[in-house]
Length: 392
Image (cartoon, rainbow, N blue to C red; front, side, top):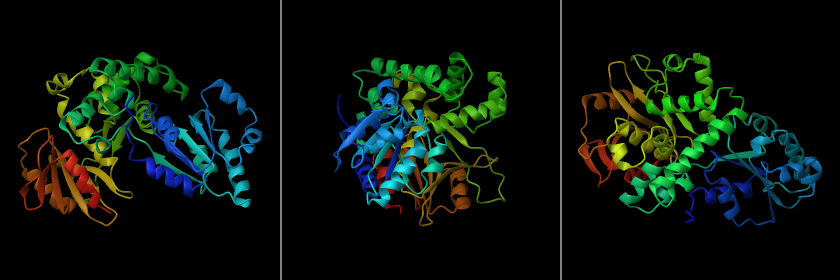
C-alpha cells in the first residue's frame, strides 16, 4: 500500500528527544502504529502490542520486564487497555532521571483522549507530552481537485482513502463502524446493544453540523438525555466526533449557546448515512453539512498551537461557521459554502462586526481566491489552509 508522509512526523521525533514519555493519540486505524514503526530513532526500539496475549504476558510483572529495557525506546501500543502500567512508568522514569536518562524512554500509542486516560494525567504529570494523529490531511496530499474530492468522499483513514475503489473503501468503513459498536464501545462500559449504538451513531450523523440538543435526541432514541450526553462525550473522547463550542464574548447578544457536533471523518459520516460515492453525496440534503464538517476538521487540525475556535450564531439568524482567535489576538471569521459564486450577506457582515474579526473568508470548493469586500475573501480550502501559516 502507498505510504503517505505525515505532517506530524518531525514533531513526534522532536518530542521524543525532549520528553521521557510521549503519548501519540488518535482513533483506531488512523495510522499511529505505521507512523511509529516508520521512524528512525537514535536508540534501540522495542514494540509491544498490548492487545496481543503474548505481549500482555510479558508484562505480567511490568516493573521486572520494563526495567530490562533501559537504554531503549519502548513503544506500548493500545496503552489504554492496561492503565495499571502508568504508576510503573512513573517510577521507572523518575529512577532513570536520577541516572541521567531524561528523554526518549517510552512512546505510548492510544485510541482514547487524555480525559479517558485519566490515570496517565495523574501519575505522569510533568513527564509526558501528548500529540494527536488525525486522519490524512489535505496538505499531506498533492494539490489536485481529484485528491481533494477523494479525501472528502472516502475520508482520511489510510485503509479507506487508499482503497482500490469506492466499494472496497465503503466496506472498510462499515467494518470499522461495526468493530466500534460491537467490540470497542462495549469494552468502555456502554451497555446498549450494537443495533442501538449503530442507530445512535446514524442519527448523530444526520445531525452533522447542528447544535446539540440532547433532550430531542433522547426522545428519538428512547433513552434519557444524560445517557445521550455520555455517549456524545465518549465518541468525542475516542476522536470520532468533535463538539465545536459557541462563541460567547458578547453577552449583550442573544446567542445560541449550544455546541455544534460533527463527525470528524467525512468518510465515516458518509458510511453511516449510506452515501457511497460523489453522486450520492451531491444529490443528498446532507451535502452542505458534510462539506462544512470536512472543511472545519481540515482547518482545526492545522491551526497553530494556542489558537481557539468556536461557532457564532444568534437567535435572529446571523451566524459564522467558524471563529478563529489566534494567540496573538487576531480574530478571523470563516463561512463555508458549497458554491463557486459566494455572496457576503448582511448577517455575515453583522457577525464580523460583533466578533471584531479583522478578516473574513468564505471557503469554496475550488478556484483561485478573489476579494468580495475589502476585508472578506473567497478562496479554496487549500488556499485557506496555506494562509493559516501566517497565524501565530
